[in-house]
Every structure is written in structure tokens, then in C-alpha cells.
Amino acid sequence: MRSHASNNIEVRVFIDDAGPKFSYAAHRVESDWTFIDGGTAIGQTVEIGRRAPGLTEAHWYFADPAKIAEHTRLKRILYDASVPLDDIHDIAV
Image (cartoon, rainbow, N blue to C red):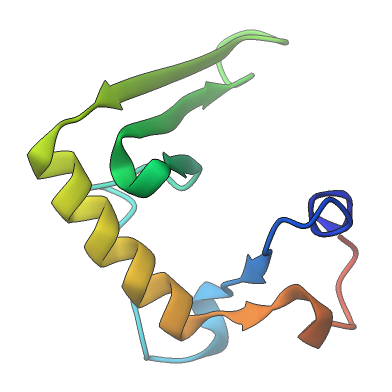
């Protein structure tokens, strides 16, 4: 995460157990996802080595109005419930 931050990428940290502000609905949206150009492209990581070592699978959505709305809403909520990486000092990142 610090590597991302050192390349001018805003990194924020959301810790699910930190408080009741937001409950991440992982059954609706994968835990790892990429939101590009306001939702023009959205990638959801589905698999990272669970079934086989080195196997990675992602589903990509392009200009999908329903996915854009869902992820825009989720992004806003996660942003409000998260903190900047620089505020986290007691975890290894």
C-alpha cells in the first residue's frame, strides 16, 4: 500500500471492525475492485490463489450503468468510513 502511495495514488484504509459506520456487503461486491475513470471500467477480483496457486481471475465491466451506480455509491461510503494510509501507524502495509 505504501508503494501505491509513493506513486501519487491516494490510499485509504477501511477496517471493518473499527466501528458501525459501514458494514461492507462482500456478498454483493468483491472485496478487491478497481474503479477507473468514474466507472467507465470496473474490475472485480474474483480469485487470488484459492483454487490453485498463482490463479487470478477478475471480471471486468465496461460502461455498465448499474455497476457504475453501485460502485459509485460504495466508493463514496467507503471513502467516508476510511482513513488516509498516513493515519495508520500500527499495521504492516
